[in-house]
Length: 249
Length: 315
Image 1 (cartoon, rainbow over the protein chains, first blue to last red):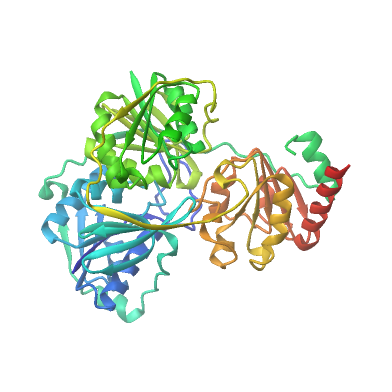
Image 2: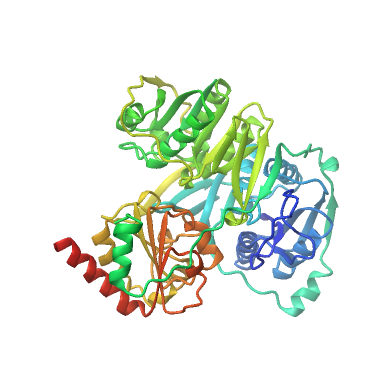
């Protein structure tokens, strides 16, 4: 079966972000960009399924400006077979991305689409669920374990109180949580090989999808800083302060 | 204008996250209806009817709703949504799971994890793990919103007396099936609703050493949490995790033990009212945000603190 994996280009998780002085957003110029960590886990899972013989082809899709091709190359170097890049310089919000992925799914007919549970930039946690709904498919979100058997997917999910397992009809959408796997580092030979793998260029227009943003960002600000830094010398002093100053115990 | 809050519950009782979503609905303003979809969920519906500010409870009974599967709950909510200006749910794993399906089927944007209400169409939400706050405006006819569990003081659980109306639900969409759950059992309060949390990090060195924190937690009526480093090291299960990739908490008192204070972790607890840090590394970033820091060996300080609390309680 064919697998589709969505990969987003985001500010690297190690970068301390800076809010622009004019409050229009977060500084992205000259900032290190990487694949969204949850999407890396998605690529890893797809590649493992192929290596185990459960999948025949892994297609990595990214959307956004030209530079997203670097993110697709990373996925190809990890083991994806080919890429699709939907070129757009408009801000793509989750609903638009879900619609674009739906259009791609109609062309490619994958049995399973894997996405990260959320992107670490906008923290929306929406796209996978929206895609599943638009396709009328089942979903297994926040997955920490996947098993394919008898034309179904068994997905173990990280939920607030522990773990939950659901059985999904295929085709289905799965979104990854941290403990699903540990993504590999691409080897140099595989990075070289990835340069020769094809990336198909597409556009929202070619896919017939209206992508204009629905939410307008009015401003982006830094959160209020906490005034911390006080030290106490002893446990007795701590308990005293908690009782009489902070009054929380 | 009426608003619909989709309740998180376990059929027997209402989760406090639902009361937070009710509070957010009240901040937006309008008549608040609460949907309880479940199986034998009358007790949960009765709890919702008692919540302050709730005008009506809709109870949808169906065996298919017992485990609140996203496909089935979304199918139900979509049929009700056109009667409302806003559809809200907690930004818990329950709300995060089904709510985007509702938004997509209504062809509207979802506003995730709001921490503030500016006006009925404008909301504040954290982005980049809480390192920035975005104010966003929705032009969609129906606003679909998930509410951050720590952002609003929960609506009072008592004082209301709303009528309960039984409604029909479409039942199962036939796409997914609940197989089983392994829920962590604990006598202690849940992390997201606890008044006090004691959390351990990599400095705990082993899962066994978390017993020190459990003893402390029992004296304080606290929940026990952990940093991602402690979870990754296998000391405790993942549902202990506080942080950007775990639970977002804001208790009255948060005691961070052997936690250095990675941005990842701070994102999940920096809205706590009072933060105490115990760490042997004086330079640990956790001290910068802690109201009270103690520099020293946690294996000495935690037992001392435990004994001090026991002593004062006894006196």
